[in-house]
Length: 521
Image (cartoon, rainbow, N blue to C red):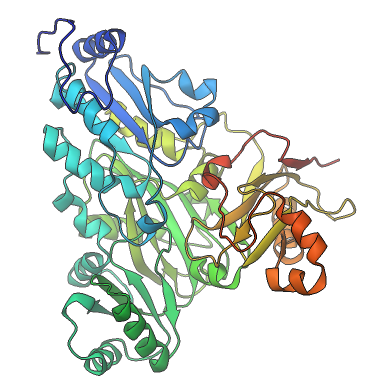
């Protein structure tokens, strides 16, 4: 039974002052708490709602509340707004964003703390569900669920799915195929040479692969080609006074994939899609600066390329026992093309990331965001594909930073052999000095391709990957050849200072004059 509530001009506590609710907002939340079976609070910290929530069918006895960063407001279309009973806006602090790719630490979101401290007196705790769509927000939600006694997974519940070291241990104990590994504890390291010998004994051969145990978006990941590189990296990391834990793995070769599924409220799961980026791994693409294509199909449409993927995913789910309902993504390598020789690399409990999310509906007929919300709003949800999905094929190609200066938003030449509709979505402005790419935060543009003919969209994707690059020039080269052009290209950017565009990740699908569109004829 909902608590009795009387609106009055009470003195706000110190927490409530951070994000004070108006009387109208309190009345609305009270009415929602009294009348609804479940109240889902959808938290968006860094990225806007990335899809149009296609085919979302919210039950009458369920409420959906948005708690969104103010920086994402301009990207929220009316077709998305209509699904929410209430939306609350807060000013997010992104000063720690880059560090989250190597450490999924607790975020400082005092506005959410303040909001929840008031909401629990208006909506019964048992009805509340805190749902995030960004991996780095999970740690913060663990904290708030515990603090305010709100139902949902705890830190301990999900640590085997988030901690890369525990993932390996559970997989080894449950017989899930995976690469050989060793753990490197920088906090308790006494002899570097002894550690190197231990790692070589456990893994056997080079190259190896390293990753922090709590990370996202390839942050901190890299290949180690030989013993010399391993020694140098350990010494450099110790010099930086890093005291965390790294996972060192056998370097696996094959097709890297992500298998996204929906864990349903009835304890079963439904496949959504399998995505892949081609022959090159994500980390290798970042290192080389090569563009990263995104492909995907439903499980049943990928039987020849990824046979028995449903059996592999089921083995992983039974081994790790993730909490239902929610989304799950099983990531790994296919060791031999068109076979079921799969190795697990890691698991994502939730949406797999913005790159896949934006294509999830076109891949499978099921938007990741729709599935994420629906499985919590509707206990009978089955993640069925939308029969009204457009009969077109869509692919994306993302271009990482390359060290230098972005001089312009240059598109493709008019006589190119492209037949697909292209949309260029620039994430940073001309005149921006680019750093070396180290994570998924470092992309400067992505191109959306659409075509009614699948063969043609794949041909166009391949052509772009081989023939088109952003207009980035190494600064040293520009200084040597044309100082005048350099000063013009920088515009108002201070030469020599590293300057990133303001919130570049939020410019995706920005309908502005900066988007270049070529429509097939």
